[in-house]
Length: 145
Image (cartoon, rainbow, N blue to C red):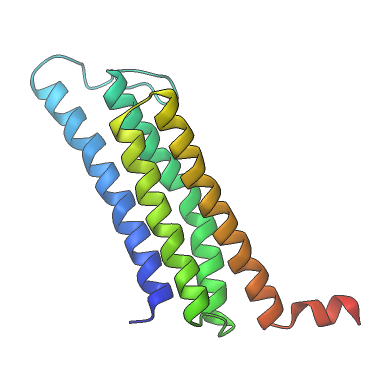
């Protein structure tokens, strides 16, 4: 399997793992009668701090997956997905897993700084990948004449 496509698959699977954490948490709380089924208002902090961090980690992954998918699939489509491109894709996924894991683990200032660092790594890698696609696809030739 193409490493770039594998990285996209891993990103998607990680997002599903985060979704499962939130779903299991909600089912547990509802089944125990601790929270009514409608006790999880969208976009508003609810539940324990740990639950809310899990919820936000899942939402963060969902928010970033379309950008990552667009960049990775563009790279595959224009045959830019060589080893360096795939390496950037894998680094992006590893940084996403670090960011989400730290988000689940703690809300401390140190954890927030580590999460932000992992996020910046992802943005740099995806930006680099996008530039690589533009260059390898020859998209600048049409603009510069």
